[in-house]
Image 1 (cartoon, rainbow, N blue to C red):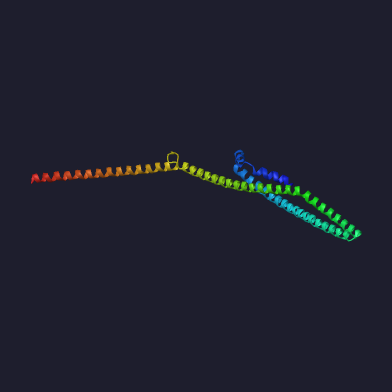
Image 2 (cartoon, rainbow, N blue to C red):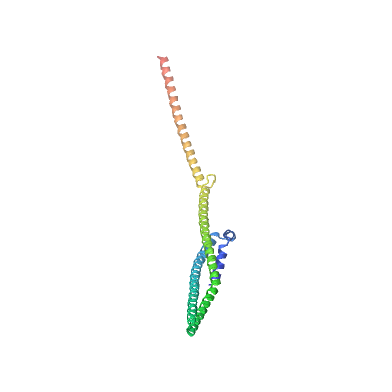
Length: 235
C-alpha cells in the first residue's frame, strides 16, 4: 500500500467524529471495540510507513549531500587544472597547458552533472519531508484519538456495570415489597398473626375455666358459713 494511501487514511481517521459515530451505533460498546482495533491496526501500519518514508528520505538526503560535495570537489579540481594550464602556457609549454585545460573541462563537466543531480533531488526531498511531517502529525492525532476511544470505552463499561447493578438491586427490592399481599413476607406475617390469635383464645379460655372454679369455691364457703351460724343458733 502506497504512502499516500496510508496518509489519506490516517488523516481521515484522525478527523473522525467519534461522538457522531457512537450516536449512530446500535451497540456503542461493540463499535468502540471495533474502532479501537481499527485505530490500533492503522497506527501500526502508519508507524511502518513513517519509518520507511524517513529511511528513504535520509538516503536521498545523503545522496544529495554527496552530490553537493562532489560538485564542490570537481569545481576545485577544475580550478586547479586551469591554473596549472595557465602556468604552463606562460612558460611556453602549450601542449601541456592544453592537456590541463582539457582536464579542467572534464572536471567542470563532472561538476555540472553533480549539480544537476543535486538540483533534481531537491523537490523530491522536499515532498518526502512534507509527507513525513504530515504522517507524523496524523499519527500523533490518531494516538490521541485512540486514547480518547479507550477512555470512552472504559467509561461506557463502567456505566453499563453500574446500570446492571442498580437493576439487580431494584429487582431485589421489588421481590420483597412488604406492601405486596402476595409476597412471602406478607404471608408469613399473616401466619404469625393467626398464631397470636390462637394463643390469645387459649388464654381467655383458661381464664374462664379458672374463674368458674373460684366461683364454685366461693359458693361452698357460703354454705359452710350458713351451716355454722345455724348450729350456733341451736346451741
